[in-house]
Length: 444
Ligand SMILES: Cc1cc2nc3c(=O)[nH]c(=O)nc-3n(C[C@H](O)[C@H](O)[C@H](O)COP(=O)(O)OP(=O)(O)OC[C@H]3O[C@@H](n4cnc5c(N)ncnc54)[C@H](O)[C@@H]3O)c2cc1C
Picture (cartoon, rainbow, N blue to C red):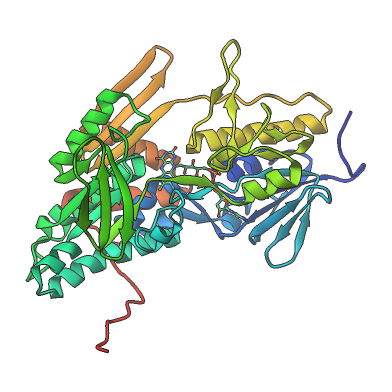
């Protein structure tokens, strides 16, 4: 039975969010007999895996972001709108934007992604920004570069040391990348540019609550990553729980009998917790669906919601399971390949419903994990048909580099990033160091 609610008319598909999931879903529907409205609160699609490069002044924003309108200029069935969805009215089949307008739909794909979680300590966010959007990256870059400027002017040794102490909280891929790159900036980019401080003596600390960094990787690669970080001069504190953060530093409580300690630091980055977009909870309440502890919407095997086959939730916002034939369902990780694959499945299921066919369960194909630590340092854990292939060091770094360039959106961006990285590799320079809008401190 065709489920077109507008007989004779094309179905209206509304996609909320043009991240990895939403973009892929819209592209997969290019030849479907539907009219798509793609709404995002940003005017660009963001390649988050390279966001840390913007936060550490290695790349400029346009190299890792592309205007949504430009991406869909050749797909006439997509209308791109700039707007933030505040609520879904499942009964009326419309999304309400925070500007008061409404967007009707026959089929809805919600791909609003995730945000930071400070584990109930939202007050920490002012002192330890997280990295999720371009605005976050600009703020971290500002704090990072201006800390060296403040240290150059500071005459008190303790205060100078606090300006020259950089702490990253969270030893996942983002935390490891941030800490490694901060160490490179301090040791290789800035030396020679200051007269009163030696940037190479800056202290870079990575604090991780669990026993090892890169928890999602096998233990051997975690150990290799920690070793590579330490070689770059990063202090790695594992089994260390952060109990307080303020403008002057952070308090750390190590596991076991070791005493709690404080690190005086003026530049702290939060890379520890992720929570689903608040839209997930609202949608769950509106549809009587469950959310998990991270606020992700618990979806059915075909990514739709119970009692609402017309609504799919995908990407980081979905608590989804992978359904491979002959295997137990397995939870799907919050990574970009999973979001893209869910986007394709959700789009395919809309077409199946339009044809009156049964929908398909989602199956995640895991190709492995990569993380870079710095120039010439990375770890790679590939899932291949003949078993896992694991390597680290320079070869892993080259693999990581070309994989990221390959997956970047836009030919121009690939060229820009390749050129910027090649020149940064030979010169150790980072050219995106311009900070606009600095307000000079005034005497009271
Ligand atoms: C710093 C960082 C590094 C990462 N590195 C890697 C990596 O190396 N490899 C990897 O596989 N994964 C990585 N990830 C994870 C990966 O980026 C996510 O899994 C992926 O982006 C999820 O895709 P998504 O479509 O669900 O959400 P997103 O890509 O986050 O997209 C969500 C979109 O929804 C929009 N939006 C949100 N709320 C609303 C609203 N209310 N109204 C309108 N629009 C809205 C946002 O503006 C955004 O465009 C990284 C993530 C971060 C933050």
